[in-house]
Image (cartoon, rainbow, N blue to C red; front, side, top):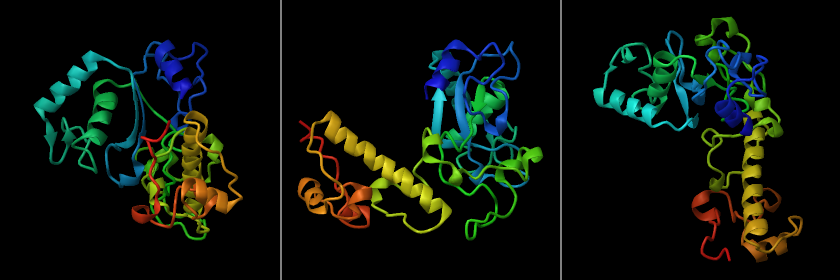
Length: 267
C-alpha cells in the first residue's frame, strides 16, 4: 500500500510512469502532467454492472482517500441537496440507479469522475480488493470462462479482454474483500476443486496465518506445530483442518465452529 501513499503525497512520478501502482486497464496514473494531484484510489463494482449502464459504481470494500475538510464539506453539501434521480442517479448524470448507487457506490464515482475528474484513480481489482470474482457475464465451468467481460460495458475496447482475478498468485494481491469468499470466521474449508475456491482457500489461510502471528509474536501466546493435531487442540481448542485453520476452528460453520479471539487474555 505504500506505493499508493507515495504518489498521493508526492504526486505522480515526473518520468510519466505509474510509480509501481497497478492501475486498471493499464491506464496511466494521471491524465496529464499538469493534473497530477490524486485524492482517491478505488476499484469498480463490475459484478453489479450491466449492459447499457452509463457508469459503473465503485466497490464498497475499498477506498483510499486524501484527508480533506473541504472535500468532506462538499460531500455533505451534495448529500444534503439530495439530487439523486430515479432514472439518472446523482445529478442526473447516470451514476445510478444500480446497487448501492444512492449511497457510497454511486456518490464516490459521481464526485471523482464527474465533479472532479482526474483526481481519482481506478485500481486493478486483481491486486487491490480482489474478491475472487468471475470477470465475465456467464458461468465458469471446469475453470473455463465464457461470456463478455463485465468491465467492458464501460470500456468497449476491452470487452473481450479481461484478466481473471481468480488466477492471480496470492503474493500479487495487496488486499482482498471477503464477500464472495465469505468471512474467514465462518470456518468454511473452500476445498472444492474450482477456480474461485482455490483462491478463497488461500485468502482464508492467509487470514488465519495473520491471526496466529498476532497471538504468538505480538501477544506471546504458545507456538504449536501444526502437524501435531493433539498439541494444536490442547493449546487452541480447534481440531478442524488444523494445518489450514491453525487450531481456531472446531468444525465447519462459524456459529459453533469458530473460536473467537480472546482479547482479555492476550497478556
